[in-house]
Image (cartoon, rainbow, N blue to C red; front, side, top):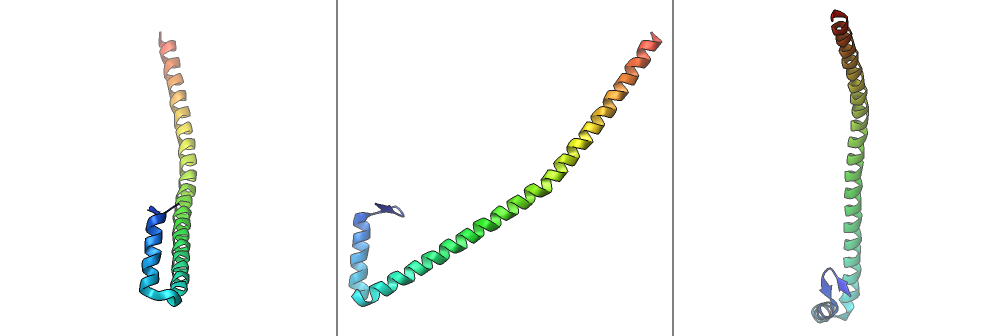
Length: 96
């Protein structure tokens, strides 16, 4: 058993120290409070991760139309270059 890199012997020592310091009446209350704190930290972490994912998805959506537009422009430019090359080669052939 390994919780946050702490093994079973370490957890046992921590629990015994907590029992001695806070007493048996306060220990369940502290455990409940610790559970609530961990739950809220996990919730905040998940919300933060969701926000990061949303931003990443928005950036991808913005880049996709630009890349499609860029590909179409590149195709048009390539077609123009190809037609110019054909015209140039036709002129050379007719001159010879």
